[in-house]
Image 1 (cartoon, rainbow, N blue to C red):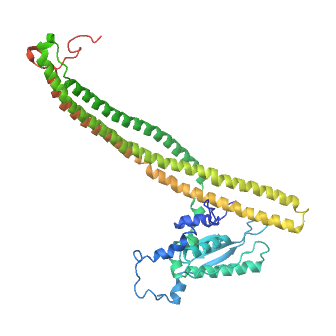
Image 2 (cartoon, rainbow, N blue to C red):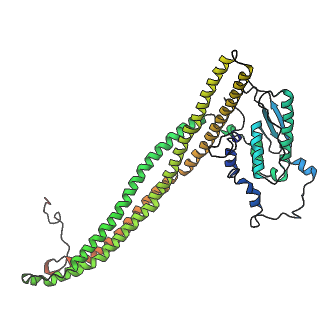
Length: 433
């Protein structure tokens, strides 16, 4: 049941306290709804924000010709039968200023009128013609069309209203027209892609956390290693008499071991820095991207469990009511049939509202999918940060190890009192086994 009617003014809000058709409008306008929007004009009067116009601010600087030239809006009836039993009157609203033509129902005008009242509580908002659910004859419909035309032209020519984004949206925005024809297929493909990307990045984040954790654990091990060397070099236990010949050698070894604790502390500091850098530059960026992907998954779930589910329920209820109407058309009193007919018309409105909410939900998903794809190149930044962290960390660690190596010479005593490090078994021609 596709309708050209703008979903923007007919989407149902999930929040409390708002009329069903108003919520999406508040969200688009960036307001908090009826409870807070009455302060809009007061905020505009903040001396720190407002810019004084040229000339006398108390004088209206428009002539009648200038007001009339702002816009001319036509409101024409669309002769289409929208309901099963009754005609749902729809209007084509055309604006010269915006060079636009959109389709609006009477309820759209009602929402527009109510938002104007809340957003501009101290301005002249023209009244709307009355609403009649049943028994609307041709004369009544034509009179209401003329009244709606007068209403929208007065609003379009009102100085503050004419410059507000609300008017432009009402006169030119038709969200369903912007959706690609294959939006459902695109949504399914994008959702599958994002699910796969999320799963891969989730595993990458876990590995990155383990790598960063190992660097920090390595720092702690190196620090303890150095402390143990220092404790060994600080040992004051006296040598036995039979080891007196090696007293000077042990003393030199102790002094060298004690000094190595500083080098291992520096190694530990470098390892800790690398772990922190990997946490900040790699793990946090992965978490940021995962948060974005998770929010997209949550949005897809809300779309399926919320809008689609309610739409299906509304269609099911509508089918039941149609069958009741068919079976009861000949057996009930006219008043009962009329009541059931009124309920069916109301349910048709519910279905249209659900359908338009679905359109707007898909419209938002289309934009959010693009936002996720904008973030996808973050992958290269994350990988670059990981590689740079490893290069920088190993480079700094290698420098400290190289500086440490010459300080080990005093630990190794070779022939003729020449201090040399021990040779490996391969260098001595001995099999390690």
